[in-house]
Length: 246
Image (tube, rainbow, N blue to C red; front, side, top):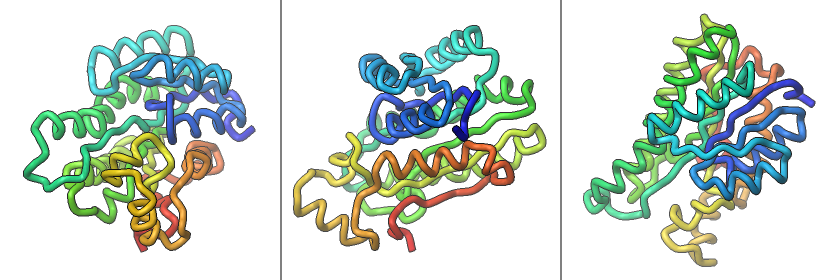
């Protein structure tokens, strides 16, 4: 029960890594707010883990503000914020990615971190405590061709996390970032271009441990970094990649 009496928001909590995090956090005593643009997915995960479903578009300022206002009314204290919601463009030469695709990637992967910080950092400062965990990617550490703008968005997230950690440390707020390798999530097909045995084998050949990441892998790292056991850890960028970035 490492997170007993803690309240955690997990964006993108309706599927993939977010659902895995919500499940493990709940099993360890946390009240989990499952925030997702797809409210039906959020409701399903929340029902499974005993959490609270919330619909939010993390790239939209008014939507994020409305979520914060609602949650603060119902919860005296938010302890943990996990910025997990993310998207990508399909693998393609950088100059062929449309402006619309580019904007979506940066709105969901980058602007969302700013919007969530703008709404919840004042709450954390008021409480003189709080943990923010941003879910980036190995793509921000070891970029792959044809995913240029996605790579760049995750590199932005890593640097933003470190900067946030330095600025917020005096207020008792910790900020870390984790970098999963591609995993068994709805985005896998987008990363591979096509989900075929051949493409899977090609990608797996680049991972020394020989398998994709699982939601449980990411959840375990997230739980440690968000727990009091990691009270001296801030500004860390942790790869969860089976050795891919070595």
